[in-house]
Image (cartoon, rainbow, N blue to C red; front, side):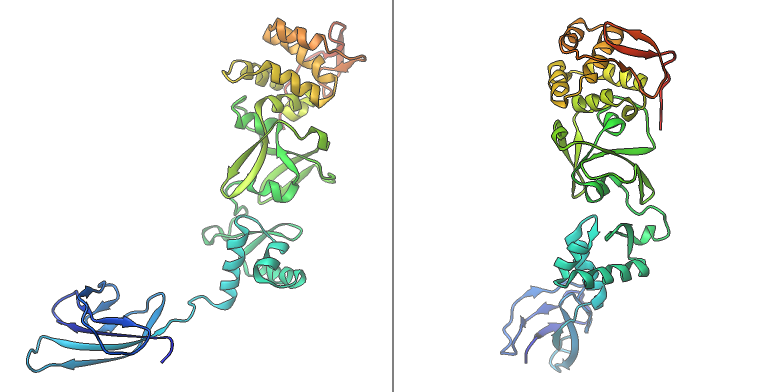
Length: 343
């Protein structure tokens, strides 16, 4: 008798805790074992379905010498999987995918071809189990958010899948590192991928995408957002990116405020700023950083380090603003009005 379990026991119908005599996968002589059975499984003479066994037959014998005692004999069979096959396959894929489901992950999890996996994911999307966020990319839809536009609580978990190799930087990193209290509507992402769209909308979140050379992948930290690893520029590297391209920091005034916040922190490292600026390999960074160090920070040492590294040519303090005045000491064109630009 395969896949069966025999349970025999003495039971007082007026008590809630009967005793199990034996549980085994083979029928054999019952041996008394005074082990209490949980009341959730057996109440009176009725058995309920458990995760592994289902009662199929039972027999109750009343002994005349003691009318309060009953002998219960129950045959249990292994319960079948409670999930339908398509739900079980979906659960398998979601366990393998964690946050974002791709055709490749589904193909490996189900051990099927990519084409078949793509069709399955598309069908699950039509049934409402998944939400498409990109070509061949999906996110699971929690039941509580089935009618919502955004079903992902943390949009950062989408960044590696959508843009890798990449990192979060600019105004988004500045806010994360508390260099600014300014909140921005878009998540700024730097990627080495070829950028065809500067703004990507996924799950209600807007990503501002900026191309970066592979040699500028330095000064990064790794964060865990749920089960997803996300790269983000560290505070000094964040400032170098924003100084190199002020619009990535919300405009030169906002960049200057973020720089001032950084130098006031205990972790501020001016030497690291200089090293990152040298590694970034763009002379405009030293011109803007030196000018801000002299006029906004009143940091003569930092300004002197930048002045010793000045390159030829002139640049604008903020290319988004029309130039008005030339400061030859820093080879910078200053705008007539410095207006903060916020996306």
